[in-house]
Image 1 (cartoon, rainbow, N blue to C red):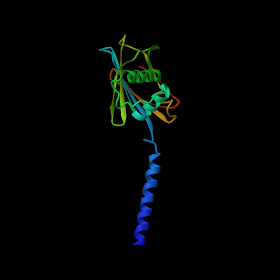
Image 2 (spheres, rainbow, N blue to C red; image 1 turned 120 degrees about the vertical axis):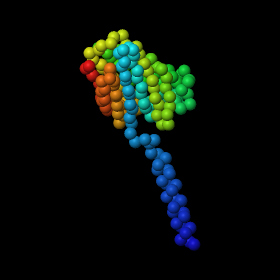
Image 3 (cartoon, one colour; image 1 turned 120 degrees about the horizontal axis):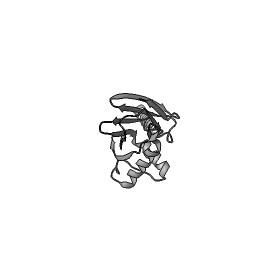
Image 4 (spheres, rainbow, N blue to C red; image 1 turned 135 degrees about the horizontal axis):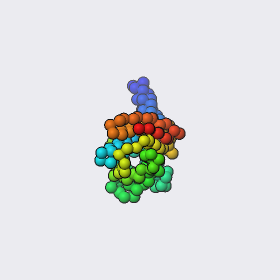
Amino acid sequence: MHFKTKSIKLLTILIVLSLQIYSFAPAHKYYFSLTEIKANTSSKTLSVSSKLFIDDLESALQKANKIKFDLSKTTDNKEVQNAVFNYINSHLQIYLDGKMVPLNLVGFETENEVVWIYLESKLNNKEFKSTKIINSILYDFSADQTNLIQYNWNNKNFTEKLTYPNKELIINQ
């Protein structure tokens, strides 16, 4: 019986230590975002969707605004929408033939551990010679950040991976 008591105590200690060790582990081991940019020249629209980990964006927003955000509970809050838009707008720019495209926030939604952010813009022309995309989303949060860009221009697809500190992609159509 003495052996059983020692074994149970040892097992309990191991479980408690394991829980403590894993409670300090990061929520995820990689830092990744996906930005999809679709240009539709027949309707003269540009749509942008960015997918980020919620906790990473919340941390970046807190750092930039000095306030704590809970994106899973505040998708309709104007202050939160402005903070999200200002952050994305300062870290994602699109230039067509050297002219910056103004992006407008459509909204955002949370899905499990990620947040989808939706932006759009009107295109003035149907033809462009070059596109420059600057994407430094979450580079201020982690030097391990990787940003994948999927760009669709009139059914031509381009995919590029940007890793910190590389934030610029130039595509010649």
